[in-house]
Length: 442
Image 1 (tube, one colour):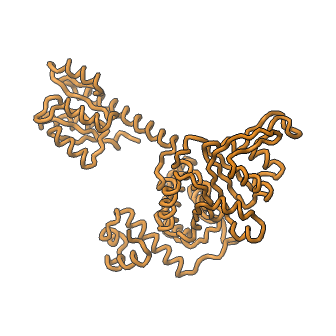
Image 2: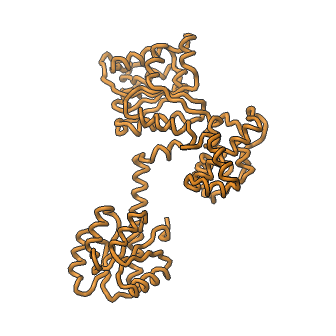
Image 3: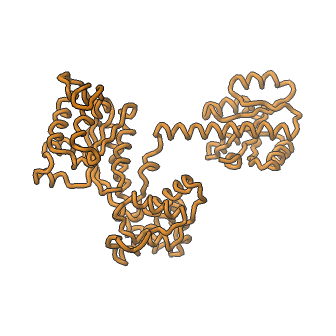
């Protein structure tokens, strides 16, 4: 983040002094907005101005600088406020610093002194904002829209359902094709629940050999079997008070489904080699790409286990079913890839976007991310035409592409139909009809 991103709000009732200070700051490439009173400054902030720092004269008509500093501190305790004082106000300014002011500048002051204090205060503000941003990331406090990306109605409904059930504690079964983001949804369910302070434990049921599965899930005591040199706490016990996520649950052996069902019913387990029951309380989230109801009817999956899992069912749509989200997702992945590979972001041209919209995406969002990484490295979006699955019809591709352009134009112009129609070069009435056709109305 640069200094230029955060303007200085300068409050001074003498227009000549204000002009001179603004010029001194602007000559040093420090953007500044001037105000003639504390009331005007507060009004600008209330209207949406986000200053990097505030520099204010102490003596102002109406509300004085000290009262302004106190009110700003109540709104944002981390906003640096620099006071401009006369000779007789130094003691007052020192006390104001004890009360939270960043620094003070005594009149008369040189332009160099003003610039130095302003630059230091801005640097502190930038550092504070960066630390806050990092903490939010570490705390997992991104919004759900930032984590599960998409403006299609299917994704809005999915986010709404996640927020509705996240804190209920009910078992959840997530269904979706490979690469749609089932584990991401599971982690969101955990992070937005009251269990988020405890462990989130994920197991890929298809990636564990059957002879190790029971030990991995339930744990074991020392010498319970050959090679068990010491006690091991199993995944279920580790997820106590938290969340246990079972990915590819359809691959779990039938005999282990029975044992796990018993644990879920009794809230107790016994480690291998032990007769001592251990109390466990974990929320179960499972994910599958198969139809578990059909598998249970065929005897390939325990029906009672399926019903235990399927208290709440979440369906993640395939990427080809929400093509209007492709440009936004691709742009997001492209930015991430550019940062990771230390490359300048590449603009998406219309030809590439057309290819993206026409592709069938058998690998879903995971495949789209891989394509974005190749594009960020300057490689073709697709390695070749061979091996791709059946693409949609020309009419479907054209409609999907048209819909994506409309969605993007409306996003850029804040939903303003007049501005969007001008940007797209189409009459407003035509755009309105297409918005209705594609179900883009709020």
